[in-house]
Every structure is written in structure tokens, then in C-alpha cells.
Image (cartoon, rainbow, N blue to C red; front, top):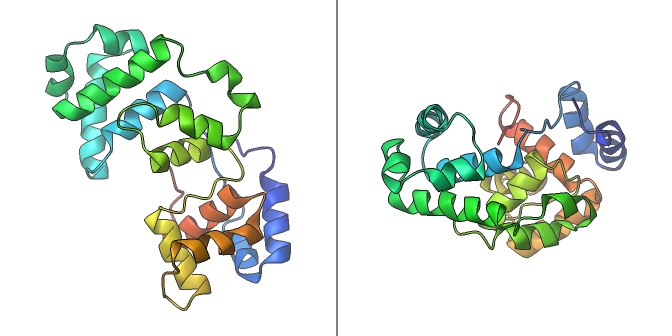
Length: 205
């Protein structure tokens, strides 16, 4: 189901930006969709770091088979050998364990997120080993459906803005940030449309 703000955001972006207007028309009927449980989503994001989608899917399938219930307690009860046997590197096994500990100890405050800013949630998530700003931003967009995240370090976003607004030249980070101001308070939505412009398949994370 589309986020409740999607139609309004798309209309406002189309009204203020001719490039966005083309995207909104071309990709009507599609939108962001949340990928469910926050803990499992974050584990999967760690699994997928620096490996191909195909390899990540394979590791995730083995991990899901070994741990039918993807919850912090199941990770904490698993040995490093079990996690590595699923295809996780030693470092990723440590990262997944650290994530599980943060959840188990109440250092990730899911119940407070509705009242917290994007920056506050990013700070909470990046305190976990293996979760950087980009991963936290992707989580806010794809899991929490936050409407105004602008992931400046995302290569797809950089490419799309260069292609459609800067004659193929990637703008410096500061210029990219300034350019994104035109899309407030719907920068997540604008980013999604820009990703779609590079790949017609729906973007998932």
C-alpha cells in the first residue's frame, strides 16, 4: 500500500518541477512500499553490504533457514560458526550480533521513533557497528517511509540528478544538497522517482 502522503507529494513535485512531472506521469500507480519488520530489514541490509544482489539473496536464504524467526534473541543464541556457515563474513557476523544486542538492551527505541526526527533515528542506528549513514537513510526511506530523506552519498541519486539536471555532469555534494532543497518536504519521493528514471523496475531495499 502506498504511503498516505504519496499522492500529495507526487502532485506537488509535478507542479513545481517539469522533470518530476514527467516521472510522476510515467510511473503513476507505483510507489514506495515498506519492507516490514525493522530488525529483519536491518539484518538484511548488513547481509547485503558490498556483495552482489544474487549473493546477498543466497546468504539471506540460508540465514532465514537457520533462523526461522529473525529476532534479536535468535541471533544472540547463535554461534559465530552458525552465522558464518550461512555465508556471513566474520565481520558481518559481529555486526549482526551488535545489532541484536542494541535491540535486546533497548538501545534502539522503536516505540519512540514516531516522535523522533530523521537525524535522531540515524544517530541511534549508526551507533550500531556496520550501520553507516547511507544504510540508515535507506532504512528510513524504505522501512519507515519517511518522506523527506535525501541520501547525498547514494550513487544512483547522484547519477540521476546529473543526467536530468546537469547535462550528465555530477554536481559536487554541496550543489547536490542545494538542488535537493527544491523538493522539500518530499525529498524521499523525489529520490524514488529519480531512481526509477535509471531503472524502470521498482526500487526496493
